[in-house]
Length: 241
Image (cartoon, rainbow, N blue to C red; front, top):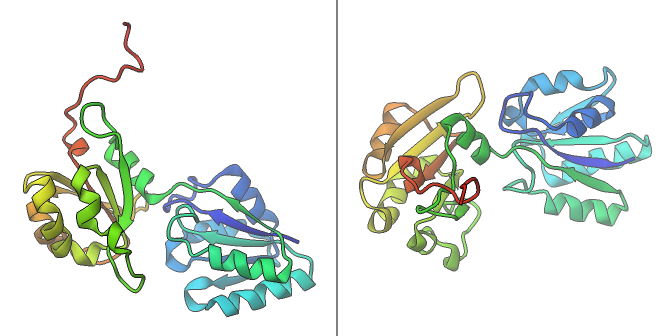
């Protein structure tokens, strides 16, 4: 018996690894991340599999399922959206499994920030612009260490990929404007790779107005940076010199 933390990818059911899909196909138990995981993937589970929606569960509830699966010697497909290592709250689950003596494995997935770059047809690191990507979020229920405040991270003007913060665009703009300027390009990608995907191309000074106009309130990633302007120096990687 083993628990597998599987990255389901951003939404498109074909953007899951072959390894992850094979585990889903043989698992007797499944805990999946509610509406964030495409239900098409659940159709690959065995007919007898017990399925649980983690959005309605506490960590203690999950432990009950893990214990039951251990008693029945059945694998558990713990399906997370995107990649489970980014805002996946898997460490506390791993700690609980360590205490239970249950083995586990993480199968990585396609994070929404790389899926967003794909649908934008955008490289996030460009020669002469930036070679750094910062993955972060605004403070919500989870506090942000002072040294990781957005105003600190923004001083080097990297490409910012801001998760879980679409309801804080006004605050984001206020913090970033002194560093990036009002004309810095911004992309907001709602539900990247899903059928109802929506993309906003705008400027930092206009982000709040545009997000309100499109009525985007959740499940969206914000990308800020001059790479989005697509002006760059040619890479030395494929140069003839």
